[in-house]
Image (cartoon, rainbow, N blue to C red):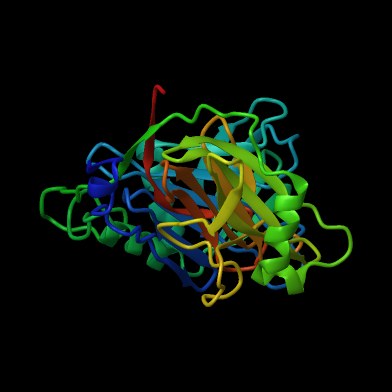
Length: 346
């Protein structure tokens, strides 16, 4: 995998992240990340969801990787179970008391995935035939075919749907590795008056109302002295809270200056023309040097996107992204980007 070592000259050549696409086929949505790890997810019907099962098919890249089928969303008192595709038993098994999901792997998962692709509906029943939930299979064949294609398995014996005679081959995945020096945090942070001055001159000034809270965190020492991360209150909705993201630099005289933080991808908040980076429901994790964002499409949290970026000393680099574009009851958001981070000692 590509090694992008930090140091301005080398890092500048690191490619801009290109998260994978997410596709929707009828009642299924599917996507893959840059490491060619793929996930297909059943969407709930457009009506009441009471008996809607959560069905997720994942498959990692590589010749050895087999699909995994995971089914959840049923009461935890299910013992013996049967999976029916269009009324025909496809798989049976038993769950330990209190188990909340059925996980099928290897040859069993391949068999079940192929059965799902030939059917129109999946039902979960117990030993007596009592129904424990259902899911639509409309679109699952196209979703799994998409996975075969992205992973380079189409037309080979290693495919789930797009089977062919050629020998199984799989594409090589590129996962960036960021080598990042650990921050030595200090308690030198901008005082309230510096933050007030920043907020009054910021594009966020018009969005602030009610009691606003701004937060500052140490980014250790930069080339010119103490550095800090500032999250400025930039407006809030019912379940999304926006922050303008700045990096502060303190000079020898103790005066702070602030610049909009640099991100290698995203951080545009709700519009591409935001004058400053905006993150939704942002949080900072000092231990991993990452800032996270979690934007809900609606209060239920069944759609939206989430991202994480690591601070490399000069900017924030995307390390993780997930997406669920369909607001249809699925809480299994699809990973579309990942990078590996190696924190080097100070």
